[in-house]
Image (tube, rainbow over the protein chains, first blue to last red):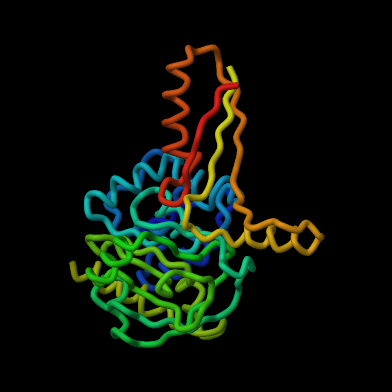
Length: 223
Length: 79
């Protein structure tokens, strides 16, 4: 399985993501700089990591979404490629238009940094197949702008098409319908605020992120 | 040519930052503040293109970068 991690100025979870992908797939991902205009050949998965790309200027993820490599990532997704965006990566995917809605300042106005319980709402995707629907897991969050907002029609469509992958069990940031992570229409793009890549090692608090990376790896190898 | 672009939250979009500012103003003794909505202003210097072309460009800038039209409205003023 061939993976890549996109790196922006201000990314700070790119190495965690690389370790999680390496451990699950047995191969180190390609680290792709945002100014590159070409992706490596034959990728199975692209991860857009967390951080504060471009200092969160203008709107979180807005400047990163305009970088040369994101055009290629969008084209990759358009061809049916798998893309995982975590935290700032979720914000970037939204600003790129690969996922609907918007992530606004947390309703509490506070940066929230702690482990939170989540419900896996949807196990029917390559990202969540390692979990069972309804399962409760704990992943860390660390963000200031994670309040998911969308219009009624979008929320209905996300619910109706079973595209809400994860929901917060308790109020974390004011997200509508407690949405923590959503899938694209073809279920091959996942954006989520919690950090699965920070929960893949028992020595550092929990392994509830491991099933995601293992599930991805198994599926890609099988395909 | 100079333009000023205003980006504001759409009606009905929750604005916790504006609300916090409103509360602070009330706490400072400014009575009668019913609500505050926070927005952004961009001052853009443009090369001497003609006005119609500039307005067209500015509109594209707003749509593609300056505003997120899911939650924000924008308006452009030539100054």
